[in-house]
Every structure is written in structure tokens, then in C-alpha cells.
Length: 178
Picture 1: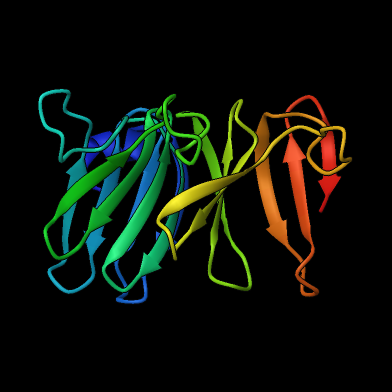
Picture 2: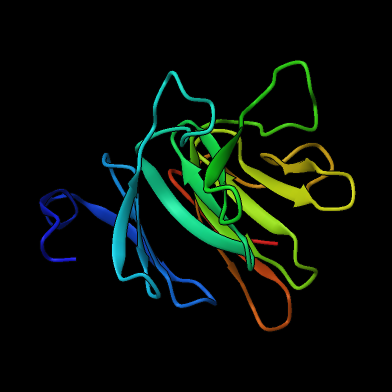
């Protein structure tokens, strides 16, 4: 790892170790790096505008392992889903014509709840919760007249408590308890 100048000199925003023992590094502008624990090699994955099977953006804020073969990346250009089987990315972005798409493409953080659903914090679209059963997103936005929601749409952190309650940190609105 220390021989890769780009990895050593970039801003690393997140590191995860997968269940297979591989290490993923999310960077601020150099994409993602994967260190294979079996092959002992370092691979770099970057955004390529001409390749729809590449990352959505080189700026990655968070990583979460979805299952044994899939890793999710929260990028400034949407959700990038990496398949270990195909070694390719699938890009998921906001679609203004689809109420159940991501609400924003600038993704900040992930959190998995007790049901296995993944919560996605965004820069200006509040929170999106991925529904596995129907393959779409439900949103928690700023407070509406029903009284449920966030005090600010810029979500920066999400944490699940042992009792399944959720803490949400926002940029400009402080802390929310759901």
C-alpha cells in the first residue's frame, strides 16, 4: 500500500474491511482503492464519463458493505454500487420524474437499521431509506406540518442506538432524534 503515491498523498475519507478481509479506501478526489487480501494487490476505481460501469464520482464520502458481493459508495455524483462478481459499478442517481428515486446526488453517509435497510444521508435532500422489497427509496425530509422530519435537509451523520432509535446530524440544523 505504501508504494502507491496517489493513495498515500490523497485525503482518505473512509476505510472499511469487508467480510472477506478486503480493504476499501474512499478518497476525496481519487476515487476508491481496493486492497485484495487474497491477491495482495491494490486496485483503483475512478469515475470515467465515457464508461457507465465506472464510479459516479471520484469524491467518495462513505462506504458500506451491502452483502458478500456488493459494496455501496456515497459519492458527490450519486450512489455507486460495486459488484464483486462483475467487477463493475451500477450508478443510481436522482430522477426528477421518479418520486421514489434518490432525492439528491450528493450523498454524505450510510447507516444500516435493524431491518437491514440502508439509510442514505444527502447534502440537500435529507435522508433516503432504501427499500429492498420494492427497490426504491423512501424519504425523510425537513419537518412538515405533521411534525415528523429533520430540522435541516443537509444530513451529515446518522447513528442507530441499541433501542433502534436514530440520531441524525445535520449541517446547519444540529442534531435530530427520530
